[in-house]
Length: 339
Image 1 (tube, one colour):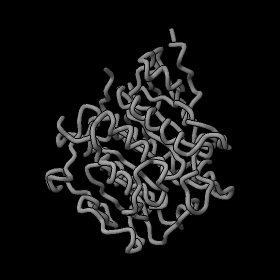
Image 2 (cartoon, rainbow, N blue to C red; image 1 turned 60 degrees about the vertical axis):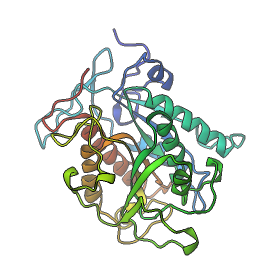
Image 3 (cartoon, one colour; image 1 turned 135 degrees about the horizontal axis):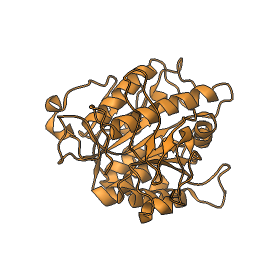
Image 4 (cartoon, rainbow, N blue to C red; image 1 turned 180 degrees about the horizontal axis):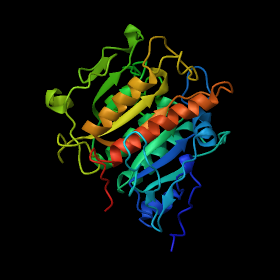
């Protein structure tokens, strides 16, 4: 008999939906969950990122999953490999935190606090959360929630901009989407950060950059054995990545700002920068991170409402979500975690 808390086909990508309370309480066991964050009160420039989750939900493909009584997925075949897609995995859509338009009575700090608490609750479960933003400021409360459970986390971020500043940011309410990393370093929430795709300048007043904030344009695809010790993150039982993985890897938070993609391929973002990644390059890099690091959470942020581009926006987010899910939950032999 189907668990009453599970709503088959009611979620994004045709996935089953359930409520956050069912996952946190253990009534529904999940390997991964998806949650929308329709929030852009941290934006200093062009707003509209609050529409990211609804664009993704409204226009993403609805896959024809099969589902057993406990919510275990099946029913899809990858024609490129002939193998199953997420077979034996439990992935649920938890809906959105808040709605559009945002209730003006909800202060920015209140939203951040709620997101921190929710992330910490999810971090106590078996589920890897994938958050769909929203502006990039939401990464700060997510990181704070992860750190409350795991201890300080390592961040791997794909972004056209170095969202860092040394100005005092003692509380989450002080941040913006353009400098949230400064707060995370000041608060001791992160052990370090790798930023890939960066191609813009910072004012001198934003520096100096800490030694453990490393910026590069190109993601190098280094094997874990060749990554410096202070940046080596192996996998764990929660992140299948083949023979290179081991249990003692540090928790890693993967953040994907969609402006890392070249605007000729993805223009629907608030601060486009020429010369970015192609989507295929980004998918390959994200897959490598998910395979070689102990990823405990993912966010995909900074999609902008644009009626001409909404279908392409949803398709891009859908491709990134599916690549993350498959790499995190499927092993390279096609086996999946079903316990």
